[in-house]
Length: 376
Ligand code: TRH
Image (cartoon, rainbow, N blue to C red):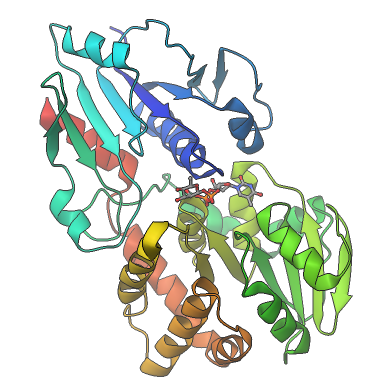
């Protein structure tokens, strides 16, 4: 008997979040649930950044048991899978939807939505809508609350993180040519362009603590170079006051987890790195993806409401809120960073506690498999 197969469709809108999430999900469905998964991607070069052994021009290739297919334009007829995931409302090919509707046995059609901590998400999670063909499509929402689809978390992830000891940390950092500077706080910076960055860099340079800042090449590097007044390329380093800056290459997706585990503080962005930083169990700073009419700020506040209430004393909570709001509202970071440092120990403990609370929930891949089982 052949194993049940799932199709996941991904359109890369921009950046790496769409492919980052779907590639992670596809791998997990194969590795942990024994499923056959085809991942249709419209922009393979983005996939290659996360999975460097992949080819940017192959119509079909296999990686970690996942069949990666170039989403052809125009669409070529393909057999319909019993479970179809349309990631982030990417709109399935019309001919594929018609083929779904023409089958004797229905497929489960799911729209995997973006992550949000907003309370309305729980009320919409799992609800169906009807397409033009009369086919039901179910909305599947990731989230932090028990009434949502949860977060992507591989089996054994936290055990692997905990086994990443001092020696593994040193080895990993050396593989990136990073030599730890004694007593320095190790910080990673993955962000969009951000007008608050110069003030944060200035505060770190003038601050009470030596800071070693690791910047993977990408959008934030332009701002860093501008502040430095010199263009740093991958592997290059610079020092200003108590701040040491080093530019890293963009690492494969699995190594990015190690980078987060290796650092004492992680600035992350978007969706996938944001979730991974939470599983790192370390303090973090989220640069949320900007949306029209500032609706992202509602999402930010919804997350902060949950996150900052998880057992945090009021002064540490204020420090956390101050830093995150400054970063996402283009405000000066100097005072918020000092405040944050003053409550660092409490915030380190809080990050561990939040991670443990979220890890007690069902993970998203398992929730999807369960949803399918209940639907049958
Ligand atoms: O790249 P992003 O900004 O993606 C965004 C968001 O998902 C946003 O919500 C969405 O609307 C938009 O894309 C279209 O940030 P995100 O989600 O964190 O994805 C980054 C991925 O890149 C993640 O899987 C981690 C990975 N990564 C590496 O593999 N290596 C690296 O060196 C770095 C820095 C990241």
